[in-house]
Length: 169
Image 1 (cartoon, rainbow, N blue to C red):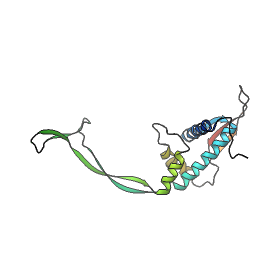
Image 2: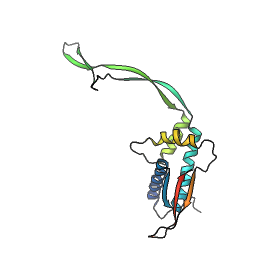
Image 3: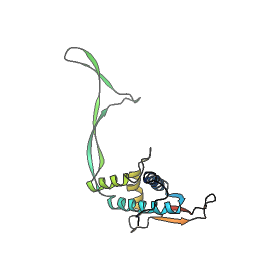
Image 4: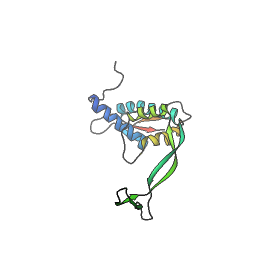
């Protein structure tokens, strides 16, 4: 007996479709799809959320030294005239050094991020990992599983397929 549903697609297409559905569910909180697909995505999303809950606080704050170009009031780089050893003048960009506090993931959290990245797609303009670890994981912290819900709808009109709504609780 196979461990997963084949969903009538070759492996590469099936995995790509499940990645897209998983990403959409995490971003939007709700998707409408067929019942078989919803059951597959439910298992994937529940495992991702439980991994994010386990590793959400596993980081440390570190000071990072940042060297960047100094900018004037119009947003342009500030330059100064410098003379080289052979007597030629050139413009050199003035740099300023600052320190910032940043999060440094511990090894197990980094591993969890990488595992999650294999199951979701990258979305331009949205930090999906940040959303998982800072918004979704704290919301479900006290729960032991059951982060998603499948609601069955009436059959689709064209092909009479069983349709379901998969949503984050």
